[in-house]
Amino acid sequence: MTTPVPDLDYTATVVRPRWDQLPLDVRRAVGAAAGARVEHAADPVTSGFSGGFAAVLRLADGRRVFAKAGSSANPHLLSAYAQEAVVLSALPREVPAPRLVGSASLREGQADERAWRVVVTEVAPGRMPHPWTETDLAAVHDACVASAAALTPAPAAMELPGMPEDYGREPETLGCFAALAAGELPLTSGQPAWVMDRLPELQALVDGSAAHLSGGTANHCDLRADNVLVDGARALFVDWNWLCVGPPWTDFVGVLPLARADGVDVDVWLARSELTRGVDPESVDAWLAAVAAYMLSNADQPVWPGGTPTVRIHQRRYARTFLDWLGERRGWADSPTSRG
Image 1 (spheres, rainbow, N blue to C red):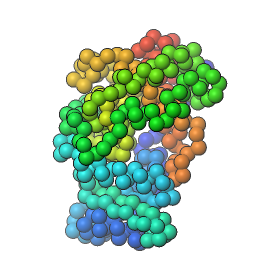
Image 2 (cartoon, helix red, strand yellow):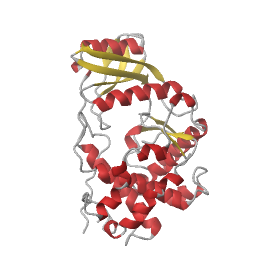
Image 3 (cartoon, one colour):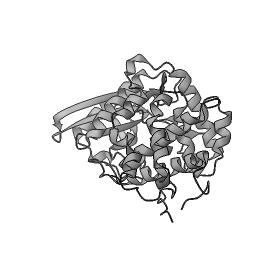
């Protein structure tokens, strides 16, 4: 029997530093990027996996902003926040995202002997879709439609990689299922029992994914519950760090496995959405297999400096939900709703 994947509360995945724990130079840089002195900082948000500072701030001029700050103690954050500032400054107004207010960088020696990067945005109203509901998925679907329309073609200023090229940078990910078949990689806990019997077919889907993932749309490529805020019938997407250029349907399909796991009939959405209606089922399956391969290849690796161990639970859950739906779609699973 397959070991179940642990539940994960996406609203409580990380402990972040408080405002008063940031170096004075960093706090001043946040205020400068925001355009006014910071009078009050709310408690840091507890979602996400990076461990950097992230909180809503009230400014001396009465405005409220959302600020993130990360140091070279977590090198991942420096590059991610730099990329986010570039992307947010280039996003068309029609994209459902909070607008960039300002950004700043501090060189090593200015703040506690570390380099820092700061990003300040508008406050995004709403709540996380956790667990997913039909209403939440409807809001996210409409936001995906708007985003795809606004980001086709992808803005040249963003200088984004194509999805096939981006995935091709990690050969260990592309070869995940072959490595499992060769005994070079163990299957992480909580995965469907049928996976080990279908490794050649899974690897073939990943090998062919490049042909299915070419396109001209800039996609968020990291949509998940903690990167979405739903406010009534409207959804906003945050954390624009990992954009890639590909087909316009990939962001929407990427949220369906978790919605399915929460009881939403995603096959109905797949059939009726203007984003996915008429898309080759092999393309959808190739995308599901590629994401599952990425998650499986990293799920038992050490966490990067400054990261949080809950990211590995997240990756095991993602792999499981993507494989569950893929197994049902291809007739590989004994039971579509089996969780082991």
